[in-house]
Image 1 (cartoon, rainbow, N blue to C red):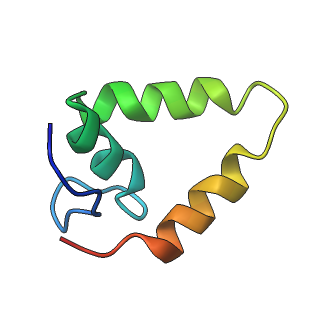
Image 2 (cartoon, rainbow, N blue to C red):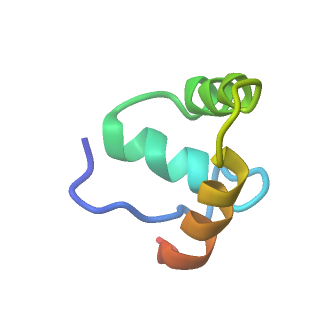
Length: 60
């Protein structure tokens, strides 16, 4: 588990948010992306949270 939450420059598809979250919590970036896509099927502000994290998280 990483100590800081950052967006890595490698292993990113759109902005690196899922990859950064996966590294922070010790989960594969593929699993984190799958969790995000599945969570988008539920009602809620998932895309808005993703955009906010994209803007706030520093790059690695």
